[in-house]
Length: 176
Ligand SMILES: [Fe+2]
Ligand SMILES: [Fe+2]
Image 1 (tube, protein in one colour):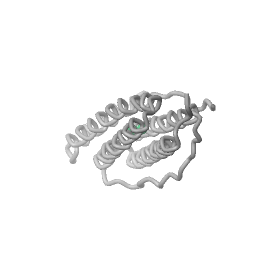
Image 2 (cartoon, rainbow, N blue to C red):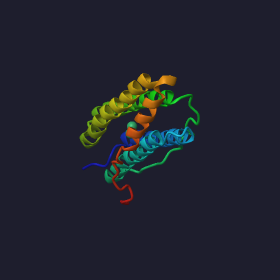
Image 3 (cartoon, rainbow, N blue to C red):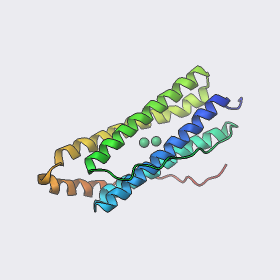
Image 4 (cartoon, rainbow, N blue to C red):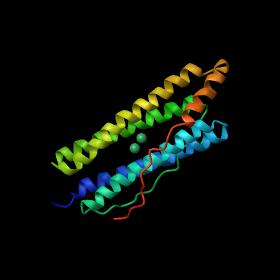
């Protein structure tokens, strides 16, 4: 198979950066929740941060497997403070929608480049984004229902539920 094209490799390296930024952003959200004494939300965002790191590694490994050069780009400092749990959940939902747009852009580029291997790799991400958006949107809806003083008991119940999310972890340590 011909090595990956330069344009495609560059775009995938850019996506690795976005996945790692997502990880950084979600870890920052986890820290925010730890500070607000919502350990379940903190756990949920921490697991999410680990998943985003795995997403980045999937693309990083793919670039190397295809004979490209994985170039690591600078990652911005993520937001540090939010006004409420609902604000965080809405930010997650918005961020996932943005990432979906980036993945779709990569699919468009791979189509243009007639890069079938990259297209096939990206299909996993297309499906993953459907799940990511659906999960974020569900939490936004639940938080809208429990917002306000009266919902404090329901908020703690939701926190307990989120604390039970099992980590969907795969090792990211295998070097090429
Ligand atoms: Fe991701
Ligand atoms: Fe995500």
